[in-house]
Amino acid sequence: MSESPVPVPFVHLRVHTEMSVSDGIVRIPDLVARVAELGQPAVAISDLSNLFGLIRFYTKARSKGVKPIAGCDVWITNEADRDQPHRMLLLVRSHAGYLNLCELLTQAYLTNQHRGRAELRREWLQERAEGLIALSGGRHGDVGACLAAGNRAAAEASARHWAQVFPGAYYVELQRGGMEGDEAYVRGAVAVAQATGLPVVATHPVQFLDRSEFRAHEARVCIAEGELLANPRRVRRFSEEQYLMSSDEMAERFADIPSALANTVEIARRCNLTLELGKPRLPDFPTPDGMPLSDYLIQLSEEGLATRMEQLFKDPAEREANREAYYARLHLECNTIINMGFPGYFLIVADFINWAKNNGVPVGPAGVRAQARWWRSAWASRIWIRSAMTCCSSAS
Image 1 (cartoon, rainbow, N blue to C red):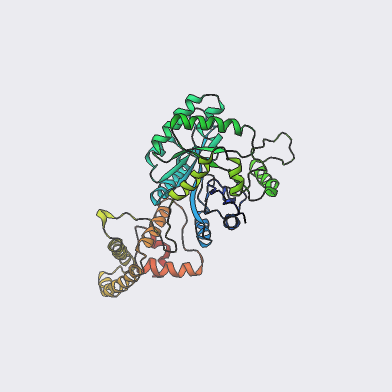
Image 2 (image 1 turned 60 degrees about the vertical axis):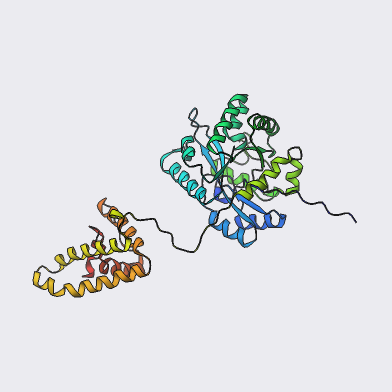
């Protein structure tokens, strides 16, 4: 009896979910279910300039026995033409890489937006490449752009540059996504990889799960771009082939370059991000000379209480008579906050309130439950911080 053929291992590393907003309609639960059904061991989501879907994807994938790979399809500023940025696919290899990717995206949104795109600058990647694997971006990367311009020497120079930025972690990306010009690009990209000694990897630009969803995806693209679906002159940037293919379909497409398939599994093996979920994560609030958060909370609270008591009790004798009771209550509240592990939270909130008060922004508790919480914590813990106490002065 003949044995059934063993499927060729393959891992999808380029998937745009609905979190990409403008060009993806893949729902994360459906993606994980389909990958599990296809018997693929892992999958990456690589939404455009964001990690919005990462936590949901991480938990869903792990619950189904699929290895989640965090990634992002990023814009790289093209200084020669800001209207023609390049693309690169960054995959998270470790926790350090996750933090670096978060920092890169934050910096892009805060300091380097162009026409609504948050773009990374090349020099940033030189500083934050640790823990990341970079794929060249296919035809939309700088290597692909140089090949399209007929400048193979520049393509090789770009590839060598990124190989130095990501030592041992840069791959020339090959795609056969059903678009005109794909084959010419693959031939050129393979030649660049051979000339530079770099590995190649096969990716498929997944925008939807099933071929039948192509028209729905096009409708979403038109909404994002303000276009008409029926416009015959509309630029078509996607094809019906950009659905989630099986391993066998991908093996058929890249039968002539088996190493490109094998490297998808190798990259999946190298990407090992573990997230600890379900626990509060607060920023490290800066304190003078590294003072513990709990001590700083008490110090600021006592300073605030002293100021407030001068306002409440104009008579020094009356103030002194009430001092012990007020400070006892203050320390009770502070210790409760500290024992619950929330001193940093209160300091952060006070910082927000201070900034708002000092900059003329109205601020106060929202809702009855918030009002009760704020009266107690803001008054009793005395997080005056020069202004926060004014929001509940009626508590006196």
